[in-house]
Image (cartoon, rainbow, N blue to C red; front, side, top):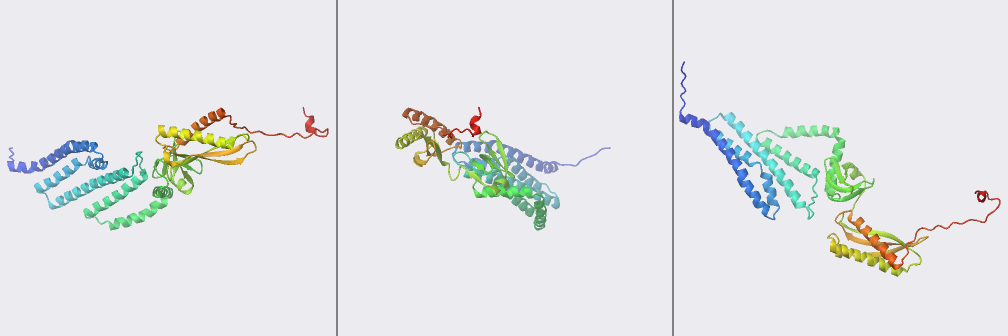
Length: 365
């Protein structure tokens, strides 16, 4: 039995041309991604404008997809196909392109916000929770636009989501409470990544991130402290980094009653000023224009005269003022010894009443 296929070159070309168009578009996308995007990234790395790198990173990886979608669109018009299938292909192309565009916009917006809010130390106040909310908003808008573009009515969907949201809210009260507490923390601006805070319950550390349910702190001992967002909002806390990192460091001292208070004041201030000048030269975190140290005498104690010296410093890290206090006490103790200024220790006077025969306590050996 002989079979004859009457297929001409024109028919073969008509069949292969759409496949060749799609294949060519994919290869063109790969070439564009590996050559053009790569060279643009090299050029962006040489510039001081930080936003060009964010733009390039946002679209990186989507070139192949977009070229492929373009090739499929062209191929669908080259090869004659039924109208119903053509409509389905068009909807697929629109949905895929809008979905990828939504991802690009999400990357771009989060990256731009991070770059815009990053300070000189490279710390951005944007948290994981803020990024999560931003992405959810963009993705939600993207899904609604996609559904509307392919002809699906979104009004019934929004109604169903509203009813379902009430049920979900009742089932996830604790999670939603922490979520809204995290939003309040971010919007208030009272807790930012990089700040050092101490809760009323005693926990303290550097704020690393505000997440969906928790705020993450890093203690001075380098341990992570995980605290529910609702606990921070419902309680009181102290932020050592606000309104700025300039602090007044009080150091309480005691000197003997035989000391000349004018001499004590002059020597103490001299030690403080010399130490601060050394730190201004050695360290960048101390500044000259934040004020001079000063002394206030507090009271006549029962064995000494109590005074407090106030050192005003601008610190980079919370631990800086503790190190400064450590060095100040060492230098001051050495100077007091050299100047003969006494640092008294507690003295208690004991009174013994006259001995009596009827007092049983004096008969105890």
